[in-house]
Image (cartoon, rainbow, N blue to C red; front, side, top):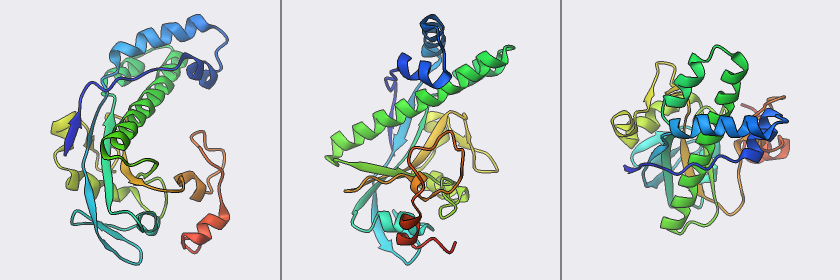
Length: 223
């Protein structure tokens, strides 16, 4: 398991203004100035080799991950790159201590954007250092096909994530600090987004339209 410390996180004022529907640039500047010193972005990752492909599972570094979609996405891949990224707990604590619920909401959204930026930094880092080109990712719990309980296997196989970057799992397999993300990156010729296989409507985090034909192609229509 490798660790990245002090990941640079660039907060885009334009994106913040758009997401929060703020009319005043001064409000955005104030939010960024409040949030920036509280962001402590770190990550761990590893390189796992595909050891076996089963009908609805794949074995990576000795660990069996039960997901037909992940197995299909790794059909032509030799390696996969598990990761955990966090921005720490400081910004989360600041938001939680705010008496103003609107400001609390604003800081929460800024935290989401910050952890996404940190994850994107890791993506670019992996692409550069391993010469991967285009990559996609999947996360436990993002699809019914790959339940959140598999988070335990991801963390256990990665190593001591908590001691390394301070991220631990709860009994319900959620991460603490909350502004943390995990998953597996893999090289791909065609971009993949879990949203394409998720029928949930009115999702604020949706990045791609639901594709019923793709659901059939992955063989999870009956699940």
